[in-house]
Image (cartoon, rainbow, N blue to C red):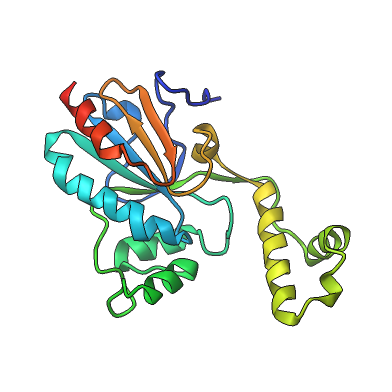
Length: 221
């Protein structure tokens, strides 16, 4: 069993189910390089509006100086959208889906329904361990009955949203995103930074204002 990640210690190996783009690799094969692991979900608008474009910029600026960036898609919610198939569409056709598609369309960030950029670094899918195959409609209905006494008074749109939220919640309890768990991540986007000796130097959720400064400093070591 892999040891949970701790700052300053050797970073545990990524738990990957599939490599969608680039050659399979892992932390122990990249000693001597600074590593940035960009953790995202397909159904995460902020990942595509901010963190992935930032990662692409860092790749272009620092790859020749010793930086390796790995993109890792994970799934801890919206399991119908955060799928291997949608990662493959992203890698091969620059296509997005779900809330990401809606948000990028509203912000005029797409060209003919596709991203105007291609992700240039390797892309992998987190290992998702399912503890049960399916959540039944009866389980969803029972959970709603116990926890949403006002459900009967909701309109049809609200009922549909409640049912989807409950389904996602129950699915999340029955699945484990292994790398996400291993690094104690809080959500997406997340940024994992590892130094040339394989030690974990940062593990941040959301906006990481010091990311470029940290990478630049580690490259100088």
